[in-house]
Length: 258
Image (cartoon, rainbow, N blue to C red; front, side, top):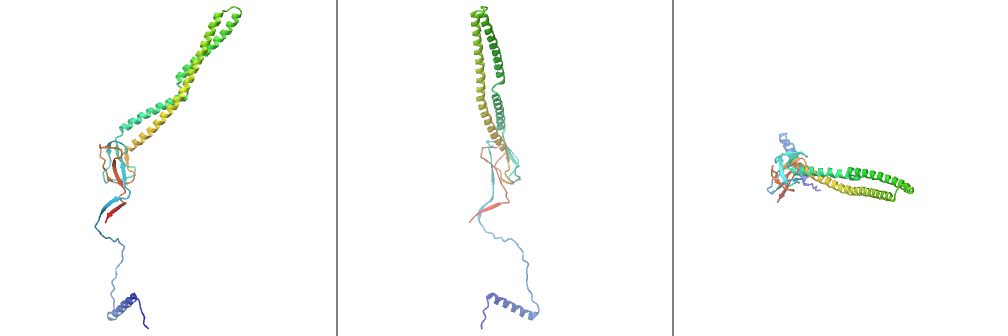
């Protein structure tokens, strides 16, 4: 019977036999050993490509103005929220102060309109109306007295007519005053609505101007390294111009070309 062994088994048997023979001749066997270690395997190849950050951040100007100050330099590591540079925002500050004044004026007008109109004008009309009401009451009492006197032939028809004309004039004056008062109230309502619209427009303008003012203080969006800084102090920039580029350079990638 013939036994067939795998190649690996045959090699192992041959190695064992060699050891046995060697032991039989000298009594000792020399075996070399080494300690295994874990390490990186590197292999160099020649190529061309580009090393770039995984998540770069491009900081653009939100204003058309001059760069006032640059507080960092290229290669600096900055923290999130740190001020990198400031832009000139003097015109924006003036515009914001003007719009705030417009808002105060519109709010005052709206409050005045909510009260029915100008307090001074309304007070004058109310005073005139009170005087006219008193005059009408007096003329009516006088008319009643003249009627009695005329019945007793102690007053003339002319006196009655004069009283009647004066009473009609006083009542006409009262209607005119009431019309003026109603006109002021209606006009105040319309003015109040317009003032409310102007106040809302002023608030929106203030929010927009404040956002632009905030953008004049250019801050770092994340923590990282400034690897590009085209902005220079006193240089003129337009809206959308790149002021700086930064990224976390511990996370980069290589684009290699074969």
